[in-house]
Length: 329
Ligand code: A2P
Image (cartoon, rainbow, N blue to C red; front, side, top):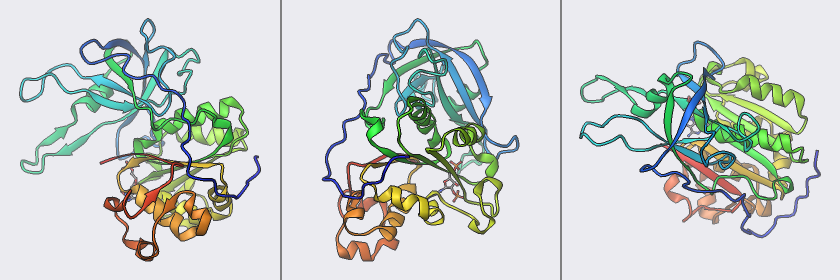
């Protein structure tokens, strides 16, 4: 375990790992081959269908050049209702820097089937690309672009920081690769992953994270189950239903020193809106220079923090460079 200095640094830019961009574009995509596709929810009876899908990119320029926090683009075959080719869809990589194989040849991602009803006709709606990907079989070819994204990656001097990762749903994907990278590097950093899902059966890569937490004393894995009380992985029964930000309270003894430390970086990935609950909780738990390490606001805004909204970000609520976010509607 590393020490926990508590002085607040100035809000300096954090140099991130260099990320290569757009090696392949839609007009000339790379061809990869599916090598694995498996359900990655904790329970077979999970409410959603989420798959871990691996692609062999051997023979392409993607080998060893896509890092956690980046996305790959997928081109689903066929055309849309207007007769135009389907648009590119981006999927976060779930693989570590060395890929699933340690050689950078096998990339992976985490895909949830989009299944819904059209609100006007109440007919079944199936998301084009997610269902295309989840239907793929081992040996099938797929057209990929990218990688893309360079703002949600780990810092270059990764060992100089501790990490608080907050994920909901498939927002877990980048953290799987990051956690694997950080633990494999044997850097003496503390890594805490808080993962939110509606039910315990929806937890993704639960076995893998449980195993990693048992093997690495510097890694904590904290599930937060929102619709079930006393869910097994949640820990003590008195915790009840939890959102990810509630873990800052239930596990305050461990997480408060982490928040106060000047080494800590916060990464948030998942459903849009989740970040506000995290910021409200941080503003409740911290004050003064501890708080300013992450959030700057005035007294009136602070007073009304129960009503903070996303539209207030960057204006009334200013975030420091130690918060990284990738949230989606
Ligand atoms: P809930 O839907 O019970 O309110 P998934 O992507 O698998 O649906 O999981 C998303 C998880 O994020 C759910 O547990 C969901 O809870 C939770 N969630 C939804 N809105 C927020 C929010 N504003 N802050 C934190 N967690 C949220």
